[in-house]
Image (cartoon, rainbow, N blue to C red; front, side):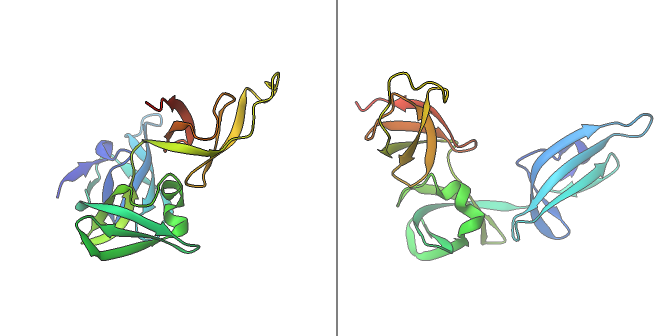
Length: 191
């Protein structure tokens, strides 16, 4: 278990705070006048999802949470839950509340591989690739001269997610999406 000083508490790190795993969402180190430096952080509890704002001072240390990674497969989602199975062990199935993982699940198709972060052998959250390639299911036709809206249109992907894409994108095209921002990045050629 690594011990982190105040300036090593950085975004995407997972720390033990009040005996619970917290993911660091943001960190900003600053100094006010003649005082010692402070790291102002936003932490998300990986069990409950609640977000806290905590300041760590230069004389404080905190332990990094011991997490493991498990390769899993996305199965399906219903109104309340998203289900996954451990890769190579289909009997080990588990779910997350749909609201907790909706931002990631909207970019997944059935049987896609995902990485699950575990804490004390319990699944906590999922990690998906930063960029995914998805097929466009529905795209309205581009109208000549329709650039008032910036030259984009709202297209629907096979997963049901909707994203703004350039006017030249049509149904059946495969496009690459940035899953962090939820934005179109490029069209992938069907070769």
